[in-house]
Image 1 (cartoon, protein in one colour):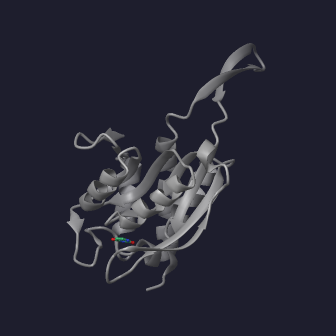
Image 2 (cartoon, rainbow, N blue to C red):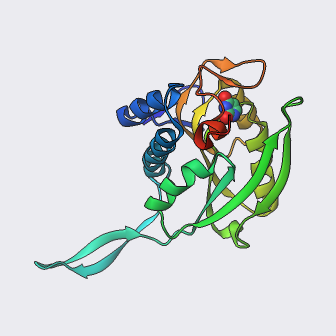
Image 3 (cartoon, rainbow, N blue to C red):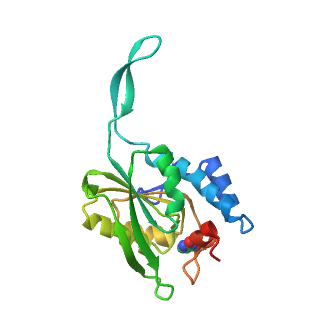
Length: 215
Ligand code: URA
């Protein structure tokens, strides 16, 4: 794990397994089924990193050999919020590692002309203010949609928020961090730039289309 020297709210999860799997995902010849499987595998590794500082306590247990004070999670309440639709590709792996987390969904898409976010669905736990919120969206491109989604979560009371993205563009990181400097970003890689259509270069194309074979 590397924390960017440029931005203290950016954590780059550049583990060899993550980077290898990401390369396979970027390849345009990789079929949807393999793409989805790789995203799920990477999401486990990202989940490991984003949960690194969960609060711990200890509990007295008996092993077959002796009694011990053993470390255990302190019971921090979690919610994973998926930004539809591509966020769902990261959700399952996150839930594999954090099975008792609640799940929220935000439906938001980019207007292809203006690249501005349009919200069409939102359902999150009522007690989101008391939970650590992990927002998942594979692509941090312009940053407009995810910044808007997190503004909505804050309006609902969310305070302790982290963002997990597979791939990021420098423009998106900058834009997002200006609006939400309190939100730590976890990403596997920061690519070169955005093209005129708002796609990350070199990127991997449209994550939703690659996952669901809709193009
Ligand atoms: N969303 C995607 O799915 N891909 C990009 O490159 C940018 C935004």
